[in-house]
Length: 133
Image (cartoon, rainbow, N blue to C red; front, side):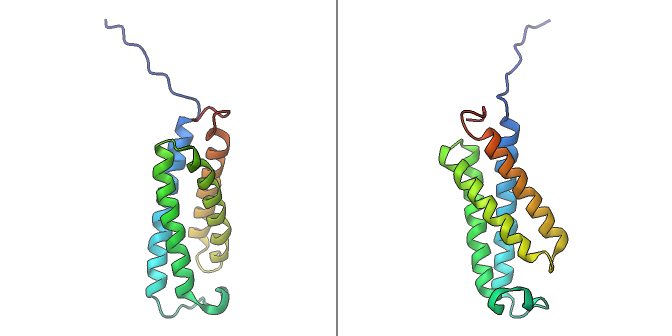
């Protein structure tokens, strides 16, 4: 029999990994939704968009998607600033996905749930006090 020492996982490291993956996933979804919205000329849901400017919303979601993806990669690298940026970006993402609820209810609710779980993971385990960093 070999005497292997078990590896010790830090408390919350799974939540930090989850937050990083979900930030990247939500960012990729926002990124591709932004590209699709920039290229779209009309939609049957024009009334839910502020000023009926789908292209402007496309650019907004494209930028938010890039911020979410970059932040997700830095969460994996345990960058201290990534926790704060991740919480802010996930909050903004959750609020603005609620505006899509009437157009795409299932996708919007899933993305809001993902954003809320990311916020939870980063708030509880993202600082030295929470055991994550």
